[in-house]
Amino acid sequence: MAQAFGGNRGLQPNPPEKGVFPLDHLQECKQAMREYMQCLKESKYSSERCRQLSKAYLECRMDRYTTFYTL
Image (cartoon, rainbow, N blue to C red; front, side):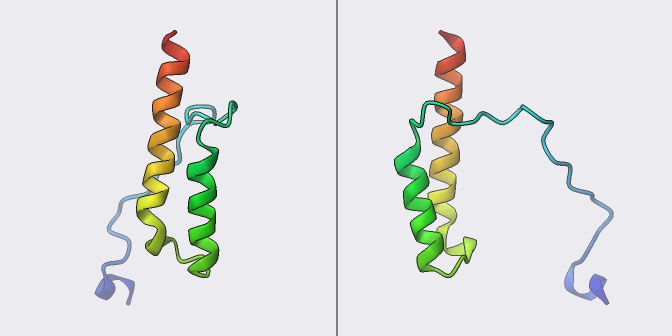
């Protein structure tokens, strides 16, 4: 039945290794995180509606990680 709706096609998602994704220790992306969390609350936690804010928040974290560790 799941195949009729495009279910599992043999691909298993793999989570990132522990410690690979940068954390926002310096809280440089706090505003982006707050906007994303506010969107989630307003949309009753429908992440689909907040996808662009989620992307902006994660991009912020990735950008800050790069500059933090290349200094």
